[in-house]
Image (cartoon, rainbow, N blue to C red; front, side, top):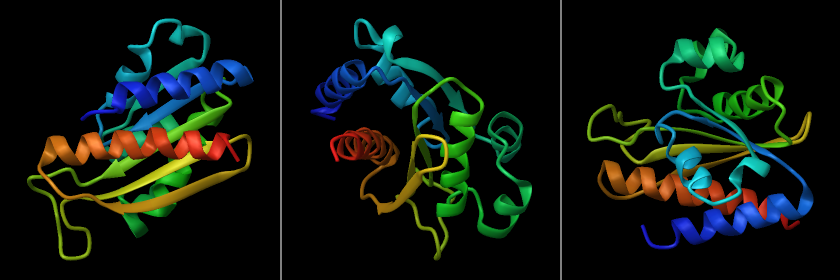
Length: 161
């Protein structure tokens, strides 16, 4: 998707200027955000680490997402991406975080959470986390690419406040 590399580069510059490091917690994007960010030369100065937590068990074990949240709300929910964003910060040395969980398709959609349903979270320090719901059109690759772009742009917006 056009613009992904440019936005990743822009985020890297902002993080470097602020002397912040970012950590990612990804489910449906499968580490794509971490790959995009670390494609940028010098990323080691502002990219702390990435968690690929595709299964519910990995969300619990690696990020400390409570099983009760997963059972009550499902992995694709505001509550879980907020817990992922907070957990990524708690289990790293990052200053800010990005978390993503969604239904990229082509299977797995339901009437309540159709293919293209994505929740993105941003951790902004110790106790501040925000989340946003998206419904992206397209096939699996398009949903994943749109998710990555929205996640990166969302963090840029929040850092520019």
